[in-house]
Image (cartoon, rainbow, N blue to C red; front, side, top):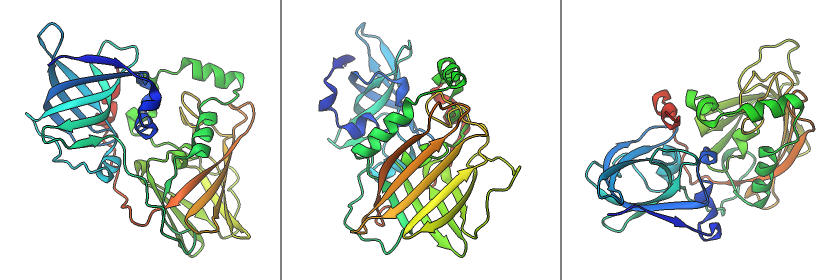
Length: 332
């Protein structure tokens, strides 16, 4: 067994594999490492499932690689279980190695078992054939072009001087809130495309549950406004109303978040998010228009449109983030 570094044209790797994980910024997506190995450990916990493998290096000596992959909800929908791997299993690993690191550490693209079964780090797309009666139910991001374009804009907004200083000082390995099991906030929470979202209407409250970090947001529909001087919380305070058949969700009073406005870009007391949910004519999709404002860190507002696909056939799983696992990606 020998480690082989393969340089590939990214177009030959499915896009949903390349972006199948929220921490891909730390990996060299221009390089694929592929090798045979023996499984040493397999840890089925969140926010990332990890396993340790042993292979033989070019010198003939055994070396260990730590492999990071997706979370348990994503993997479960892709056919993985907590029993998919066990110590001693022989596998073929393909993944992106960590960028600028001396560690043998990679994020998984695919894993092939001895029986020929291939497991990937991505989950299947929803069937997209069911029709919703209204906005309630289970939905998943489409991962389409509009979603990708908006996420790209979210990743590189025009910043204030304070925002630019914060982004330049950001260290992915030591500063990421993920290492503390701190959830993302809107709009990142609802634009991931990897996790399921569930909308539930009850009396004067709309409950919006994200599978990502088990976040539940309550949208008050009783005509109230945002409380003056109200408590700032991680997901903010949300109020809503109807404009014809469009549900409008207005959120403010967000607490400070190190990456609340994008990778390395904080958010603060001036953050404001407006979301507009409209059911498509064929009742199979939601068109979601988003406006993000934060004058403290963003030089101008960001807006865009994404789509959610109705996915009643897919099951939401508990995320249950474990802090000791969450810290594992930090560079020693």
